[in-house]
Structure formats: structure tokens, C-alpha cells
Image 1 (spheres, rainbow, N blue to C red):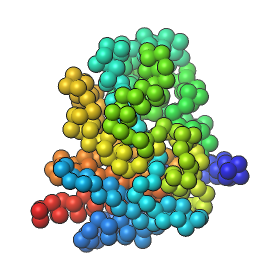
Image 2: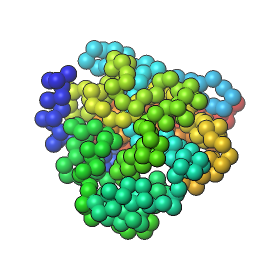
Image 3: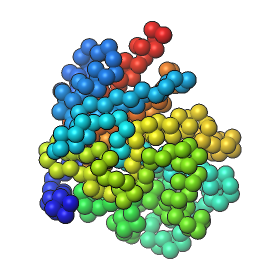
Image 4: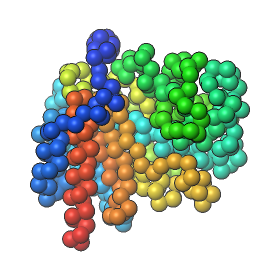
Length: 345
């Protein structure tokens, strides 16, 4: 593992960032988008492996029906272990849905206020983050704070630094704001790092424990974790970059879960069973009901499709090159297969 970490550090400067990947418009993805749809989700999942993806997992759950599980490719390419639908996976920014839910519950209890400012909760940052005395909790939840995103900083490396750790905050302290609070939208991981610190302060204990007690436990999500240090690493699907042979599973990059656990959570989030009526009203006013997640080696999509009353989770363990666009196309095709099937029932 030590050798792997050294190799990861050596190639860090060459890793393509999330934004540069997304701006690509590969002709391969366009061709795949226009290709005839296969008859089944499994056929589409199998075909994904023919598009240079190492492994893929898809979870489908229509209301009132048993969940469906699909997988193809490799769980671990080096050891030639086949992908399985119950594997653990790094879900990255999908974790923001869990954090926003925790914030919601604390607001409903009166422990937090949407209108209080960052300086109110963390006064030591008043002189270190521009407009800290104007940035509200709601603006942080909604990415309208103007606080710079630490993962965009020149000194941040996806392959060397853990995600969501307090040490990352130092990268943006004393930096100018991206914009005045509330005047624009700017996705920033720093917002949620700070929300975690705020929740921990008002609770008097780690906000991660609150998420476990108030969100994971009530939904019986026994396969959702907040760090690779909490799991058997062999159960975590390997993560790859298209240009390298290294397995990026050893990086601590936040939330980890099975597709089924994410699906159960997303269903509860969308149907309101996660919340009381008061909490539901608060959540609907501050954050979204779906998310994607990207970290080095892993790309995930979690969405509820109201027209077919179906939750669909997709995990792909290959990033880099044009894989992000391709993965989005594959997800779209899975949904179209499900819609076609729905019309026949």
C-alpha cells in the first residue's frame, strides 16, 4: 500500500480535473447515445464494459416492487475479480444529500438557524473568510456563499489529500470571495466542510455520529460508511483512471456505500419518510433531491425519476478521458430502457 501511495503522488500532477473532463465532447459518447437501445438493462450494463469502462453497478427500484441489481466488468481488475452489485463504492458528493438532511433535522429542532451567519457559529473565521459575517447557513447549504472551493485550489491534489478534512480549509483561508453572498451560485466543497464543523460545534460531538444515529440507523443502512478506515477494503470496488494502472481505492475520499443503501436513502429522501412534516418543508426549501459524485477513480449518479416512480443508482469505477460524458450517456440509456419497459406494463 505504501508503494501505491508513492505512485499516486508521482502521477498527481498529471491527473485530469473534474471540470476539464466534463468539458470534453467525445465522438464516442455521441455514437453510443445514438445507438439502438438494447432490450434489457443488463445488456446495456454489459455493453458499458465495451466502452472502456472497468466496472459498473446499477440499482433499480420501482415503488412497490423488489429492487433489481445489475453489474458487469471488474470489481478488481488486477485480481480479475468480477463486479458484484453489493460492492461498496465511494459516493463522493452524493454525501452532501446526507449532510443537508442532517442540517435540516438540526434546524427543525432549533439547534441551527438558516439565517445565522458563518461568523455567528465559527467566530474565529470572521477575519479569515471574506463576508463571514454576512454568509448565512442557508447560503452555505445552497452553494451561494461565495466561499472558494478548496478542491479548485492550485495546491489541492485529488490523489494526495483526503476529502472533507479540516486541513483542506487552510487552502482557502484569507482568500478573496468568489462573489458576494447570495449574488451568484458557485459549487464549493468548502461549504459542506464548514457545515460539518458547525454541526459538530452545536451538537458537542462529531456530526458524523449524528448522521449515523439520525439518518443511517432509522433507515437500517448498515452498508454506508464515512471513511475507508471503517470498512474491509477488499469489499470496496477498485477505482481507476483511464490513463493509469494504479488502483485509487486506498484514498480516503468520504462517504462509502452500496448501491442498495444509496437507493434506500434516496427513496426515503424523495418520498418524505426520512423526515417529519416540518423537516420535509425545510429540506424542500434548501436543497436538491438528487446528486452525482466524482472522486479519483469513482463516478456515481443517484436520481429518482418521478415519471416512472423509480430510483436508479449507477456506479462506474473508471474516470479520465471521456468517461464522464460516456457514463452520463449510459445512465440516460438505462432510464430510457426502463421507461420503455414501463409503457409495456
